[in-house]
Length: 336
Image 1 (cartoon, one colour):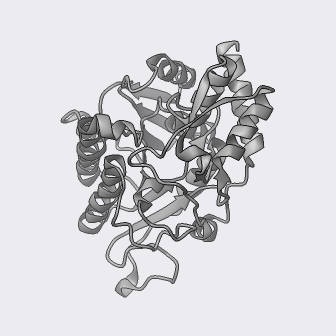
Image 2 (cartoon, rainbow, N blue to C red):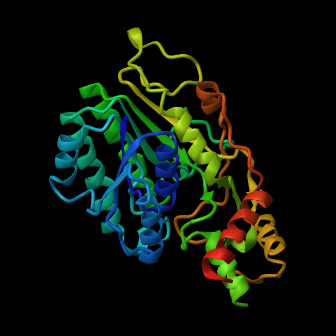
C-alpha cells in the first residue's frame, strides 16, 4: 500500500483527511504533538479513533523539533505528504506570535528539508484564505497579488507558500498549496465560531458577534474540503516547458508548484450563520454585538474555478445542512 504522512493528524482537518486516506487503502503515518492550544482530550479522541485502523501509526512529536521529520522521512519514505500541522487562529497570533514562528515557519522548514533529502511524489500543504489580507475585490482568485496580510498568522502562511515554492524550484519537489476558507463540521475546533456559538447558546450564555454582525465568510464543510484534497492528490504539478502556463492556472513558470483555493464559493452573512445554528438547536442566541477585532477582515469569498478545472469537483454543502450535522455531532459527543 502507498504511504502518506499527514502532519497535524489529530487536528480537525488532519483527522478527517487521515480517515479518508485509510478508507482509500493507504498506510497513514500521523504526526501530531497534541499542543494545548485547545482541549487536548478532543485530539486524543480523534487519534484513538484513527488508531483503530491497523494501517495507521502515529508519532507524537512537534514538527519543529530538530531531526524528527528527517528521521521519519528516512525511515518511512512517504509517497505523499499532506502538511496540515500549524499553530492556528488569527486572534491568538496577536497574543502569542512566537508559537506561530516555531510551528508554521520553523516546522515547515524542517518538513521541506526532509522532503529535499527524501522526495515524496507529491506534497500538499495547507495555506489559508487569510493570505488575501487587505484585498477587497472578491471573489478571491489565486492569481491576484497577496502582499498585505492583516495578521501574523496570515504572514506565516504566506511565508510558508514562498518557502515551499523555493524548494519546489530548487529541488524539483511537486507541491500544491491549498488556501482554506472557514472550514467547519463534526469534530471541529473549539476556538471556531460554530463550536463556541453552539456551546454558549446551549448554556444560555451570550455570544460575541464581531463587527456588529456585518461579516461574511465562505463557510466550507469538512467533507467537501477532504474530497477536494483527495482529488488533488493525483494532480501533482509539473514544471512547465519553456515557462508557459495556461491562463487562470497558478502553476509556477519555474517550478512544479501550484496554489489552489478550496471553499464553498458562497459567502454567508454571519447573522445568517447564527440563524442556522439557532434553527438546528431550536434555541435563540443572546447576541453581544462587538466591534471588529484586530487582524480580522470583514469578508472572504473564493473563486473555485481552478479547483474545478483541475479536478472536476467543487464544494457544495449548504450551511444549514452542514451546521445541522455539526450540532448533531456536538449533542452526541457532549450529551448535550
